[in-house]
Image (cartoon, rainbow, N blue to C red):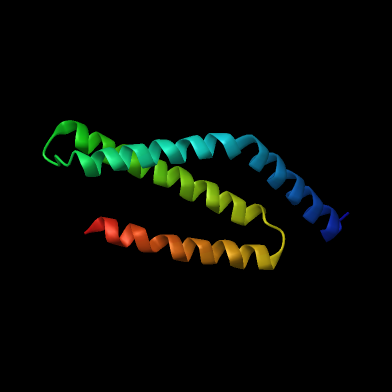
Length: 102
Protein backbone atom coordinates (compact mmCIF):
# COMPACT_ATOMS: atom_id res chain seq x y z
CA UNK A 1 0.00 0.00 0.00
CA UNK A 2 1.39 3.41 -0.96
CA UNK A 3 1.01 6.50 1.14
CA UNK A 4 -0.62 9.46 -0.63
CA UNK A 5 1.81 12.27 -1.33
CA UNK A 6 -0.26 14.81 0.62
CA UNK A 7 0.04 12.69 3.78
CA UNK A 8 3.76 12.37 3.22
CA UNK A 9 4.02 16.10 2.63
CA UNK A 10 2.03 16.84 5.79
CA UNK A 11 4.28 14.53 7.82
CA UNK A 12 7.39 16.22 6.48
CA UNK A 13 5.95 19.62 7.32
CA UNK A 14 5.16 18.45 10.86
CA UNK A 15 8.71 17.13 11.26
CA UNK A 16 10.14 20.38 9.94
CA UNK A 17 8.01 22.49 12.29
CA UNK A 18 8.94 20.31 15.28
CA UNK A 19 12.62 20.47 14.33
CA UNK A 20 12.53 24.25 13.98
CA UNK A 21 10.74 24.64 17.30
CA UNK A 22 13.35 22.52 19.09
CA UNK A 23 16.46 23.99 17.49
CA UNK A 24 15.53 27.65 17.06
CA UNK A 25 16.92 28.90 20.38
CA UNK A 26 19.96 26.61 20.24
CA UNK A 27 20.97 27.71 16.75
CA UNK A 28 20.46 31.36 17.64
CA UNK A 29 22.72 30.94 20.67
CA UNK A 30 25.34 29.14 18.56
CA UNK A 31 25.22 31.96 16.02
CA UNK A 32 25.97 34.46 18.80
CA UNK A 33 28.80 32.24 20.06
CA UNK A 34 30.22 32.11 16.54
CA UNK A 35 30.01 35.89 16.13
CA UNK A 36 31.70 36.40 19.50
CA UNK A 37 34.43 33.92 18.64
CA UNK A 38 35.03 35.42 15.22
CA UNK A 39 35.00 38.98 16.56
CA UNK A 40 37.51 38.03 19.23
CA UNK A 41 39.79 36.55 16.61
CA UNK A 42 39.59 39.68 14.49
CA UNK A 43 40.12 42.08 17.40
CA UNK A 44 42.98 40.12 18.96
CA UNK A 45 44.66 38.81 15.83
CA UNK A 46 47.45 36.45 16.84
CA UNK A 47 47.37 33.59 14.32
CA UNK A 48 50.61 32.09 15.64
CA UNK A 49 49.13 31.35 19.08
CA UNK A 50 47.51 28.06 20.06
CA UNK A 51 44.17 29.52 21.21
CA UNK A 52 43.70 31.22 17.85
CA UNK A 53 43.98 27.88 16.05
CA UNK A 54 41.49 26.27 18.45
CA UNK A 55 39.02 29.11 17.94
CA UNK A 56 39.41 28.74 14.18
CA UNK A 57 38.65 25.01 14.41
CA UNK A 58 35.69 25.75 16.68
CA UNK A 59 34.39 28.27 14.13
CA UNK A 60 34.67 25.67 11.35
CA UNK A 61 32.80 23.18 13.53
CA UNK A 62 29.99 25.69 14.05
CA UNK A 63 29.85 26.31 10.30
CA UNK A 64 29.49 22.56 9.74
CA UNK A 65 26.60 22.50 12.22
CA UNK A 66 24.89 25.34 10.39
CA UNK A 67 25.41 23.62 7.02
CA UNK A 68 24.02 20.35 8.41
CA UNK A 69 21.00 22.23 9.78
CA UNK A 70 20.36 23.88 6.44
CA UNK A 71 20.75 20.59 4.56
CA UNK A 72 18.29 18.92 6.93
CA UNK A 73 15.79 21.72 6.37
CA UNK A 74 16.17 21.40 2.60
CA UNK A 75 15.54 17.66 2.77
CA UNK A 76 12.43 18.13 4.91
CA UNK A 77 10.97 20.94 2.85
CA UNK A 78 8.14 19.52 0.81
CA UNK A 79 7.56 22.31 -1.66
CA UNK A 80 9.89 22.74 -4.62
CA UNK A 81 9.71 26.51 -4.16
CA UNK A 82 10.96 26.15 -0.59
CA UNK A 83 13.82 23.94 -1.79
CA UNK A 84 14.92 26.39 -4.48
CA UNK A 85 14.81 29.24 -1.95
CA UNK A 86 16.94 27.21 0.45
CA UNK A 87 19.41 26.36 -2.31
CA UNK A 88 19.62 30.04 -3.19
CA UNK A 89 20.44 30.73 0.46
CA UNK A 90 23.24 28.15 0.28
CA UNK A 91 24.65 29.72 -2.84
CA UNK A 92 24.62 33.19 -1.32
CA UNK A 93 26.22 32.05 1.94
CA UNK A 94 29.18 30.53 0.07
CA UNK A 95 30.52 34.03 -0.68
CA UNK A 96 31.73 34.79 2.86
CA UNK A 97 33.39 31.38 3.04
CA UNK A 98 35.43 32.10 -0.06
CA UNK A 99 36.58 35.42 1.39
CA UNK A 100 37.51 33.78 4.66
CA UNK A 101 39.84 31.26 3.02
CA UNK A 102 42.23 33.94 1.80
